[in-house]
Structures are given as C-alpha cells and as structure tokens.
Length: 77
Image (cartoon, rainbow, N blue to C red; front, side, top):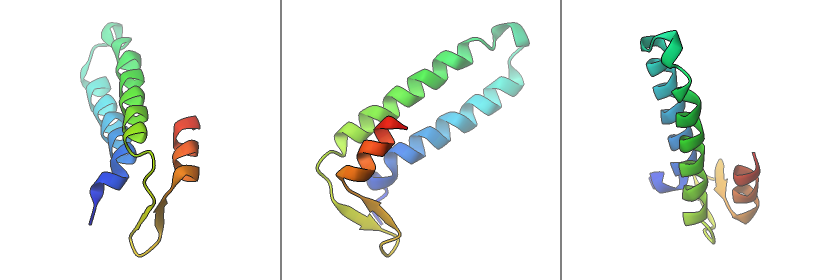
C-alpha cells in the first residue's frame, strides 16, 4: 500500500488532532498560537499536493483515486 498518495489527508488529520490536544492543555490566553499552527499545517498539506502533481494512481481497490482533478479540489478546498 502506497501511503504517499494519502499524504495531504494524513497531514491535515495529524495537525487537527495535535491542535485539539494542545488546545486542551494550553491556558486560554496562549491559545492564539493554535491558529497559526493550523495555517502552517494547511500550507504543508498544500505543498504535499504540489509534490503529487502529475500522479494518476488508485488505492484501496479503486476506492481512492488520485488524479489532476482530485488534486485541484484538494488545493481549492
């Protein structure tokens, strides 16, 4: 299984879980930095979609398709 195809989704998921955990542990006056951490995670996810440009592959018996059309919508949304 090539998990490299799922890299943008994995990055967003790990960053989201990290923000949830850190947000529960930080005092309320220091939680402003979590927004910057979220933006940084989204930028890293965007860069990982750029690394996947030109790839046309499927995973999970064709249930996950990575092509230029899907990469476009991953970058937009």
